[in-house]
Length: 109
Image (cartoon, rainbow, N blue to C red; front, top):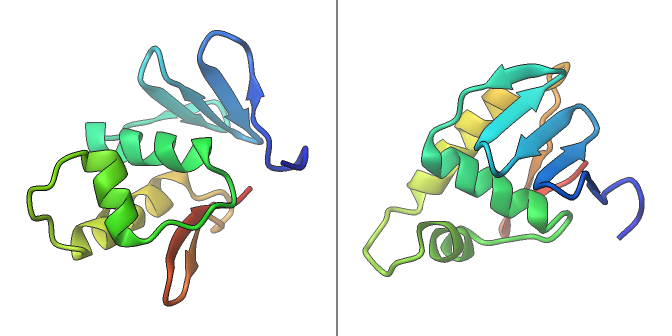
């Protein structure tokens, strides 16, 4: 990993990616110091993406990794969750969850 994608971890479960901070222990996300409210699944999806910067995941892989069970979930569920995260985490109109057309999504700082 290059230094531009590697998170800064304070050793207490708090990771910073530029102006986005994820506090896993407190289940809190801040953007430019302002707390952003996320649902439990939004937080899990964001946490998963942030632990795997630049890696591309298909919708099926995200469902398996984040939801963690084989119950049928519509693939559009991922589209909805990614859209919500993009809205909540946008910095100057830019979000760090990128679409890789025909493949899936990735976290890219």
